[in-house]
Amino acid sequence: MMKHRAGFSLIEVLVGIGLFLVVATAVYSSYVSLIKLANANQARIVGIQLANEQFEVVRNMPYVNVGLTNGIPIGVLQQNQTLIRGGFTYTVTLVVRNIDLATSTLQASSKLVEVNIACASCKQGFDPIVLTGYVSPANLQSAASGGALIVQVFDSNGIPIQGATVVVQSTATSSITNTDITNNNGTLEIIGVPPGANVYRVTVSKTGFSTARTYAPGDPSNPNPSSADITIVAGEVSQVSLSIDALSELNFTSVSPTCQPVGNFHFNLTGEKQIGQGVPKYSEDLGTDAGGTLALNPMEWDTYTLTPADSTHDANGITPFSPIALNAGNTQNIQLVVVPQSPNSLMVAVQDSALKLPLSGATVELSGNGYDRSEVTGQGFFSQTDWSGGSGQSAFLIQNKYAGDDGSVDVSTSSGNVVLKQVFDEFSPSGQLESSTFDTGSPSNFYSLFWTPINQPAFAGQDPIRFQVATTPSTTPDGPWTYLGPDGSATSYYTVPGTQISGAAGNQYLRYMMYLSTETATVTPSISDVSFTYTSDCIPPGQVLFQGLTAGDYTLNISKSGYVTWSGTVTVGAGWQNTVINLEQ
Image (cartoon, rainbow, N blue to C red; front, top):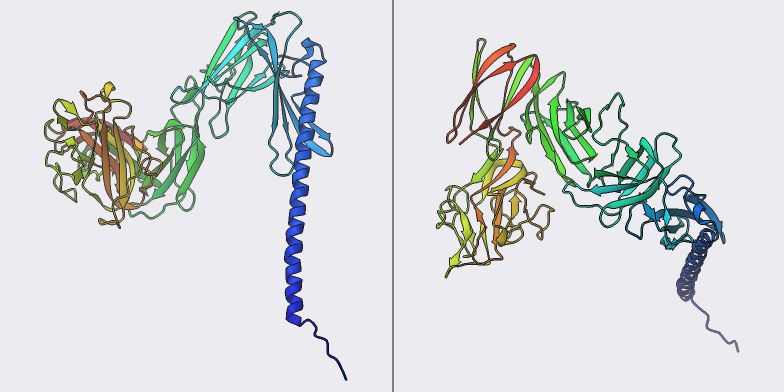
């Protein structure tokens, strides 16, 4: 009689193999992770031992030798080394600094030594090891030879910058290159600097920030620098203040009046900042690419003047007006509307004398030398100066009405102004007003939001006037209007007039939300004017171009309803030129 034994089927075998592989992979991954973790811990232990080793070297050397071979104070230590310990490669960086623990900035009572151990090749994100200590001379305080240098670093608003890198380079012999960082007050004090006349170049920088430095006097390209290389006098304190701030970006587009890209348009861009008498810090001849775009990044905050210098096209308009203010940490878009070149051209920009906003609807007449022509400037901004008509208006048709408010604002008591509502001699602590919908007529680029008055009562508190802006491509957006601030979020607010409107490019409709607040019940902030600038359909706001002119003097007449008529003489020469006219109400 034959007996049959049951075996494993092919499916059972495959399932078993699969389960084994899953378990084996998990075990192997855990094993590898443990090995990496142990390796990272070992690298850190060895790094700490190396840092202690460096401190032992410092402790056992003569006090006079504690310093960097090319730094201040001068000594025998190298600032940067690459060392191998326990199979790991470490980068060792030393900082040695005279420290004044007494009252005189010319006395070094001790030296600060900082050891930084980094390991780029170590796994698991090796964090640098930093050890700091002090070494002192045998006596309580030692007189430092030479002088002292105090470097102050601040931003565009005068706020001190912590952690800025300061490099002090001796230009005469290159024997000293001292690198250190500013403290919490944006200051670096260097004691014991060898004396010399205009022999120390100071350069300050920080990641993501601009760079500033001193310059050699008498250089042919900059004979009278505004910040000269530093002179150190024995027993004296020398100071230098330099300003840096977050880098910005300029984006240029060159297009025709019908918004078609025009490539390779050339111009000069010159900044207002000067590194010496008549020497701008930035001045470059530039041009857009074949697609009509140019991105300049990084750029330093400054006010830039743009001058067209193209051989085939004239500028029909520049938006925003030149000169162009670029704030720190901002991106500014600049649109150049260009037309085929004429031998002699005059671009006239018309703006409100008080608000400095481009004026649309202004009639500009140029006459003389057998030429007589009138042009009307394009729409440059919307403005609302009266809200006394009350709420309930969706589209901005009646000039003194708006969409709605929260019941805590007063639009009628103070003629033409929005203030907080007053009840029993006390003003409401806060209130808000939503504008009607402004229609620019076509997809637009929005630029800046303005309001007046700029100065508000001090007792109202910080930022008693705030705004947010909402834009959409349709007059009836899905859901409620989404109001945003300058960083593109719903939690930020426009608090400075003239701030660039964020995230609104390509939309046709705009609303603003006005927020008023006070910290004192007896005072209220107020708003008398709200406006915003934009361009639409590539018709530059507040600008017209006259072409085909002959050289000579012309009469210019500019008129607009509500403004005083302006008349004057302009002289037209060869090529393209522009003039800015301010109209008064």
